[in-house]
Length: 452
Image (cartoon, rainbow, N blue to C red):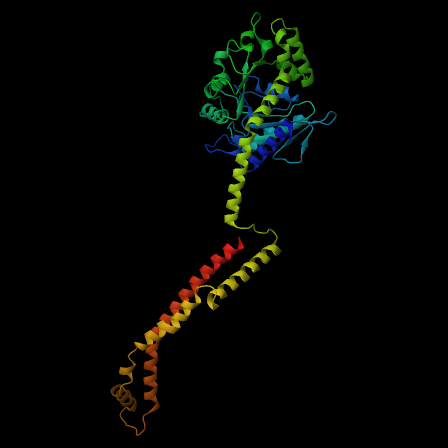
């Protein structure tokens, strides 16, 4: 049986396939495969420390930074644990087989790909960027980073940006398979936290929410967040986790994430307030808890995911069967397909004419019944009466009568008779033409059905 780690990898692959096919959830009210896949969505206000938490979990400095809205497209971050000694690298879904070993180039590519979709403006887009990171220093985990919640639009942003971001975030966190990672800075009143307010609205029982307190080291002296971390101030079904981010000075000095993790562990271990919680604090512990919980959710949802995939396969196969077999790509195969269809049409059309299929008998009926019946109604008895013949011959004699009737008189009699034939003959031709067109349409339809 597949391990849970391989299941997470499989879910990651399905997510990537969904994105390639245009199914990325978020902006649709219809049930999709993407929405059936469990994932961890990172939610927080601007400057809440979301980027620092993600970088701390990954152990690499790779996300764009700046003021205002930096994350303008969802970032699907898929972490893959590799064996010790292997080189770390990142890989984007839109740049397959291109490995980024320089994580500053990963940051640049995220920014460039965002600009390709949204332009240089500060607009947002629901189309996600897929980034996979392979490293021995991560756990198997999938995180979705969303734009930070904001209360006002700043210069360069559309007036609707506040509502647009909230709508996008809600479209993710409202889904029952979404695990919410709510980021709140510890130096902010928890009652005013945008992330906790939104998570409480969509997950009132706290069953899907993990609370994360950042910036614990920046709280005023003499204060702490023990009541929150121990679940008394704001209880959730999952324990709160405290995080100590890199300071702005550390970021400017390019302090690596390994050293930052070490400083984080030392902070909790030596803190008189949080020392007793040190084993359950920090970004490393958070990553392990999330990975384990994601595994359990996948295990619980696996039958439903399998059922949805099988149902989707059946629906697609039925649609493909209705559309017909695939058309070859190269010219030679296409020519062969065309010739095969022409031969099939020719065979079916002949069967309609010669027997075996209905149609030829109706054409025979035109000549055997319709045309003779029309001819019998022609006024030949009047046209060939002695009186009419005498009149025609007399008109042909002119002013000088002949002993023998002239040829011109006979010709006039024949031409007149032929004119009577014209109407029934044309009607018979039209009837046969109509029947042939009907047989052609029927033969084409039967050829298409046979070719499926």
